[in-house]
Image (cartoon, rainbow, N blue to C red; front, side):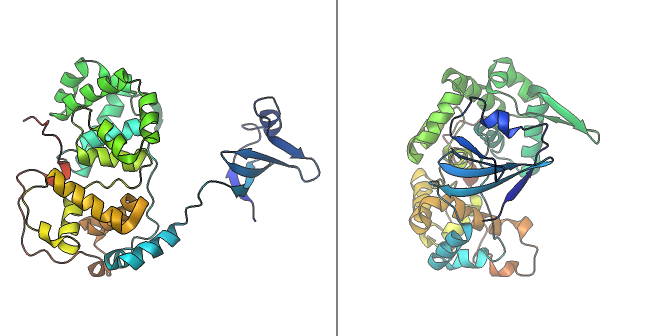
Length: 319
């Protein structure tokens, strides 16, 4: 097994004092080989110190070795649409995002498009986060802590910044999370079963099924969570569940049916698999010569929704 390399100057990390200084007791140094062997996170590691970099390799692990190609093969065997989509959308990974940023970003996503969501998230960071650095004339900020978003004045401030009804959802949800002990509450959601965590998230002001599923999937490691938005509804109705075609809104029953169908098809990583189909359905990714092979079946007519499908939630919206 070959060594991997990380850029890390010797002055920034000294293995001898760090691993043998009384902090941990499972690292042994082999002087002849000039390498450390130890156990961390159910994994056996070997480490070697060099002047400008750190070498490492994994000897063995109890953690699951997730081979994405194997799952792509399994999903392709079960679904011809996925088989076509994955030719272009290979290597799609789920980001393990920080839950606080993920949650408030998706509150901003309600009835919104990506460029405006990005603008809102940047406003949150600029007005409530901490300045990190400036590079090429651009100032970068951290995402704000929950405490910074929880004070009553935040709602009016965000309304002035153009957040609309989302201002209330952000401030109220932040106050609720703070009341529920913040980081401990998020850690508890990760330890829960998926559907329990989803119900807990929906107790927050303005969080409906779709946003709760986004948070479960993208930052809480519940990879069976499947957010049902317009794209997913159309994919499901046109290719898997034809009796759902032409509906004006998605009921709770329909939402569950779509999610359960994909979970039965793809298993515990259904949310991951559906992300590949989601990417294939986005117009911005359909500019390549082979895009025709991965589009869902042609829609017969345009459907107008009285309730936006991508943000089906508990009706807590304002004008």
